[in-house]
Amino acid sequence: MKPGSLPALAVLMMLLAACGGAASSSPPPSAPAASAAARPSGVASKPAASAVTSAAASQGAIADSQAQWDRTLAAAKQEGKVGVVIPPGDVYLAVFDAFQKKHGIAVDRLAVTGQAELVPKLTAERTAGQFNWDVVMHSPVLLYGGLKPMQALEPLRPALALPDAVDDSKWFKGFNGGWQDQGKSLAYAFSSQVLWAAYANRGTTPEAQLSKVDQLRDAQWKGKIALQDPRVPSAGTLMMAAWLQGKGEDSLRSFLQNSQMVITQDRRQLVEWLFRGQYPVAMGVSPEGLATLASQGVDLKNVQPLIDSDPAASAISNGTGAVGLVNKAPHPNAAKVFINWLLSQEGQVAYAKATLYNSRRTDVPVVDKQGAVDPAKTYLDFNSEETFPSYLKAANVSKEILK
Image 1: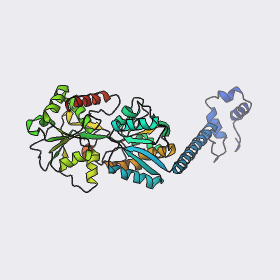
Image 2: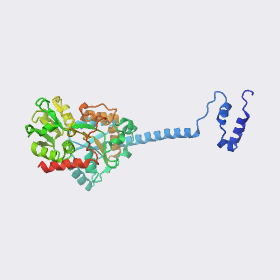
Image 3: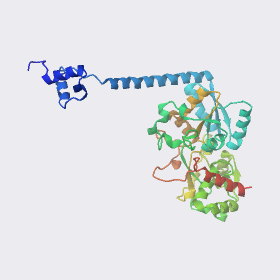
Image 4: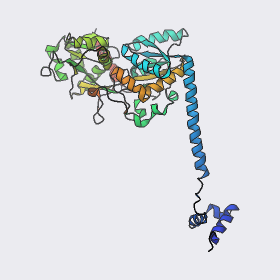
């Protein structure tokens, strides 16, 4: 065969393909080899039209997504600020400072302890036609237990635009593992912490004297335990729910009746009492309470959790590390920018450092090693709407006994 000539079969196949003949739709097994032989040396085959179209469409989608985000960011800067509902405490200021430095958007803040304070306020405002808040960054209970029933929340998913914020590979148990409401759309938890039921001041109470949670029922601790008020949603409620689940209702009732615990709703006061030795043991200590004093240079090395394998000794807590989007928001674009930033690596690093709550993001350094979640262990978990009845029962038992 002369150089450059084609086998007769290849010529026939090309003619049939050009004419739309049967050979083009059902080529014989030898056709691919013949086609390759017919291609001049050094000439690459062209990519399939469908592959070119798909790649172009993908690039176009990325460009459109970026253009849409740029428009959202520009509109957010025009709005100039975002209104965020938060728990009390100065530790959150560092989070907002980092956000403002990144995007130049100011943050208006409303600090509330929980739904007993927020729901009446928002109800009154909204009844009067006032819509002042965009985002709630608080406990999941406040979101699905307080704002969901009053229909004050917007589905969060449509606002999540940054790929980094929703990247499954960057979240413990995947991104969807953070939803705490039954519909998986309104209350998203980004923090996850092992919260220990009790903390002791080891300067006054050595481990030889107290090493087990069950010992707290002993008469020697009567009147010497401070407790975050469990009658309202709090870390104290979570710890009473763990006691209820781990030891039973009779045990919880007996413990609350006989211990004569001193109650406070102030996270900082609880830690101060413990740090100063006014009370040698505190229950319901939150990372924010510890972070508040630590940020002021207080040495908390003697304030240590009572680490025990007893089921009542610990529970998983999202704390105040959950976020929801308020509907009829006055600054909708700024709200989207804030939420996407908060769930990004940068936002989670800022939040974890400020509050001492460990992030669910796996690319954010652990800030509390004693509170780090061990994937190999099973913990009591009362954070979700599905498990809320146990949490609520602990609160009701506490209300009944702690007058």
